[in-house]
Figure 1: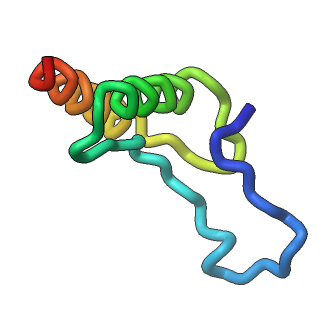
Figure 2: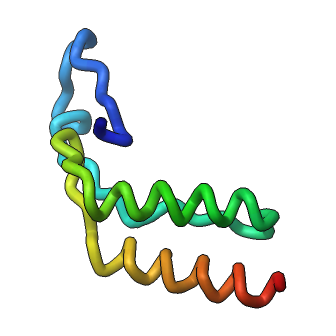
Length: 75
């Protein structure tokens, strides 16, 4: 299931036709559960098809590294 379902029922403009690029889901100052949820969502970005968006894999991997650092610092 794509993480970013786009509604195709409304009129399209040039701005809406531009591709969406996903760079990762970050949590700033979140608790352990929020960080774990963000890690799960980022894993889904990398490993599940996202037909309505492009995924910047390098940026998502960097976000995952940052979240793991944040998780380690909180322990």
